[in-house]
Image (cartoon, rainbow, N blue to C red; front, side, top):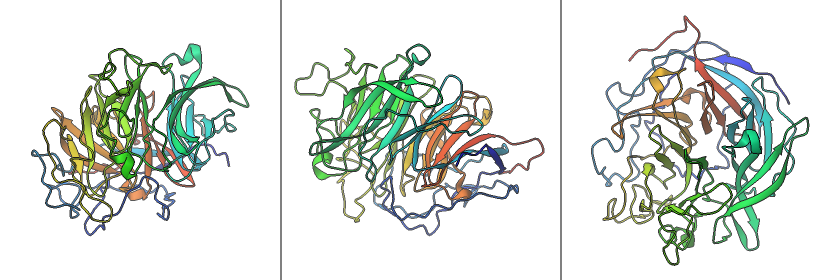
Length: 440
């Protein structure tokens, strides 16, 4: 069903109270999880701070209480609270498990549906195009399917669009990145599709292939990968001969930049930029052109990492979580030569996407990290100072939606996708004059 945008106004900022929460595994697609439709009736609700005005947002018991932070403020930062009134607009709905949204130069949006491998072009009024033809075949089981989408830096002239997806292969699958020309019109289609990157080796797994793409300011393309959720994949997360558990950096045509850290290392995959990651779906560059990621941990141990060239982030040798069975993974949380996370969560938030806000519509959010929370069912806001987290907030928690994606629009609004068989594209803008504002 095609619907025009309908506005539902909330003045929100309800932080998710975690008291009494039962820890749960957070494989990024959770069959059986009930998603509340949360259409709302338009009544204003006063924003309010979480369980303690002086304490952290998270008050639930950690899964691994014996693991202590490496430095003060590495976890459970003090709760903060957005002071501005916020309006939530329902731009589009009836999206089946949407995964990513990206803006075209004319402010229309490309949106992917992961399981069925579909792409739609959605206008600002919510009008949805027919499915874009020419999408490559995908392995849409479980966490697989069509994932990220990004127009190329030169899109106005080249019309190139980049796609990441679980590519079906003999004996399994693997993440692939392809690019194609977008032929726009009443029946849009992708033409001249070319695969520019393939995760190696192939493995028969339906989980943990990563899949987030982000263009760096210098025009190179970073692609986040995962450990494939199998012991044999996990064991390769710190091995340079495998793409598993890595972030890779390529040129737009798939060739390898000459200044990649392991390009001259015998036996190493030359695309590798960093290693020792579990599964990354959330990444963005800050105003200083530095790459930040928010990484899926196991049961406990989601991580915020500042990614640097050639560094090893330690998975599975170190970490702050445990197996979903409750069995231990790590003998320690620190080891020589392995990087510490800037911040971690236990219990987890299940990070689906990250945007570092730089717009003008929400001045108090400038420089803040906005993270799409799946199992946490919230838009998680982090305030940083000198590369340390000094505040955390859970937004949109009252809706009860798993948040899959968050991006900043060209006008400074914030757009999110909800993860559901009836997913929604929501737009966040400042509330109308006279709206009720909360106070600390």
